[in-house]
Amino acid sequence: MAHKRLVAVRIDNNLCVGSGTCVASHPAKFAFQPDGHAKYVAEVPDEAAAREAEELCPVSAISLVFEEEEEQ
Image (cartoon, rainbow, N blue to C red; front, side):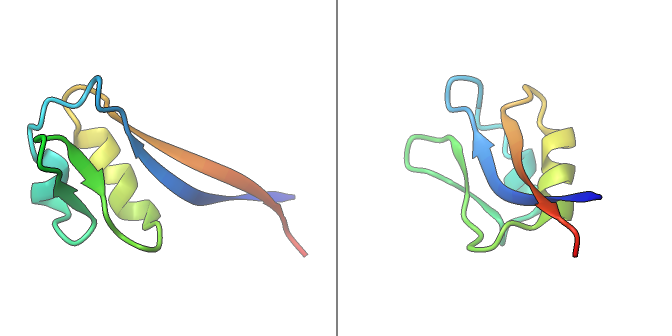
């Protein structure tokens, strides 16, 4: 059976309005860029934090990228 592993957290700058819900809920994982858009800054993807931020984003600018891994 395949297991999905989070490999990236993407923020669409065309959708992001800089509401800051992701930054406020997970300041160690998200930060504001100079242009006011959010950026995922954690070195290692944190699935729980990313999923929560994705759900909280008022404009659905956050998307999660998964890779399937075969279980051994």
